[in-house]
Length: 146
Image (cartoon, rainbow, N blue to C red; front, side):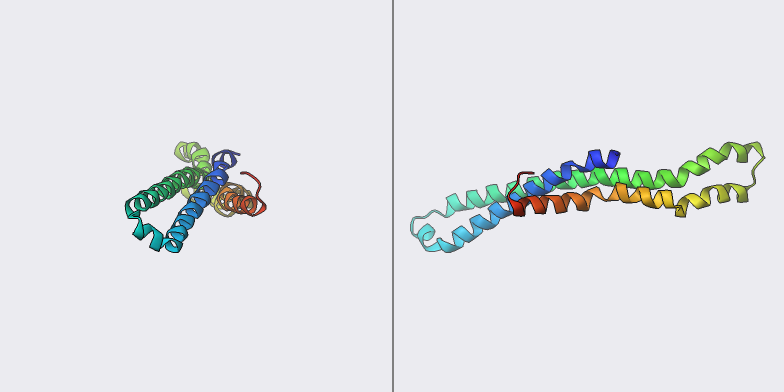
């Protein structure tokens, strides 16, 4: 649930990135098609400012996307480490009390590494990033807003 809450903003961030990249491509193509007119009217400085603005928009969108992906990675990595460490922390008092051997402690923690609940749960924590990108692409193709 936490990964969904953190990852749901990736759809909007991906859409913003794709829109900024499209604006930049459009500007570059427009300049390429009108290069003679731009040169004759000495409009290079204006076009350079326009391109710099578009590049700044792309970089800003990429920074937002990287920040969202970093937050999602913290959640997914934290979940993975929690599922490995939690059984050891639960069994540690028995080990320190002397009622559980070190082998028993490792056996208590071993199944959590390959257990099906961990595998099933890890899909839900790692899926929001690719799902968000696919939803954004689908919305862009259909023309629906994100």
